[in-house]
Image (cartoon, rainbow, N blue to C red; front, side, top):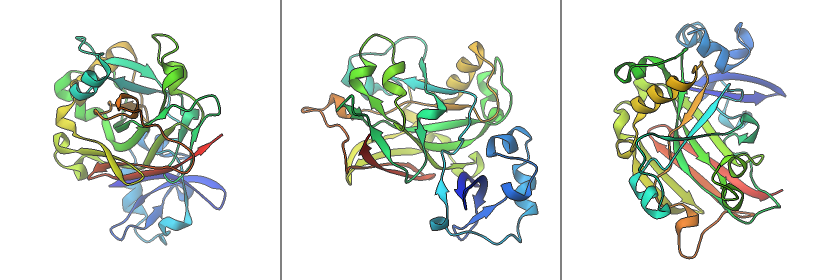
Length: 280
C-alpha cells in the first residue's frame, strides 16, 4: 500500500491511496493523530480494512506533508554508491558514513525547496528513504525487513559551501526547506524486489542521476543493523540511504539548483517526488 501524510482543510492527517489513485483519509476517524503513531501501533492494515467505505479525496484536494512529518530521527547515509565515492574522492571506509537531518528542514511533495540567501550552491541528491516500523536495537542483518514499514523518495538537498565549512556535514544539510520527502511511503510487499528499486533524478527534465538499490555499498540490511547498534530506532524513524553519482557539485562546470528550477526524484516503483526551487 501507499501511505501519506497531508493537510486538508487546514488539518494535518494521513491516509492511503486506493486502486484509483485517490486518497482515503483514515486519520480523522482513527485514534491516531499521525502516520507515525499508526505505524507504532502496527495499525495500518486494520485502518485500511475499516475505511473501505470512506469517500475518497482527489490528489489535487490536499497539501502534501513530508511522508513522516515528525520523525524522532532522520539518519542520512553519505558516500554509499561507488560512483559517488569516485566523483567526490571520499568514502571507502569499512562502516557507513552517517549524519543527521532535522525534521524542520524537510518539505513535502510539490512544496517549494528553498535555496537560502546565504548560498548559491544548493545541490540535489536523489535517494531512497527507509522508514522504520517498530522498535529496533542491535538488529541481526538477516532480520532487517522485520523492522521496516516502507520506503519513500527523498531529496537530501545540500548547501555545499556550508557542508564543507568543516569535516562535519550538519550545517549544509539542515537549512530550512532543503530536504524533499514524499510523496508517500510504499510498503515492502508492494515494492517487490527491493534490490531493483531504481532512482532517477531529473533537473528541469534532464536526467542527472540514475542507479538501482542493488548498487548500494552498504545495503538496507547493513544500514538497519549498523544504525540500530548505536541508537534505538523507533517507529517513524527515517534512514536516507545514500545518493548515486551525478551530483551537481561534481560536474564541470558545477550544476546547482536555483529560482524557478524543477527537481524530480523518481524511485521506481514508488513514485516521483517533485519540488520547485525558490530563493528565501
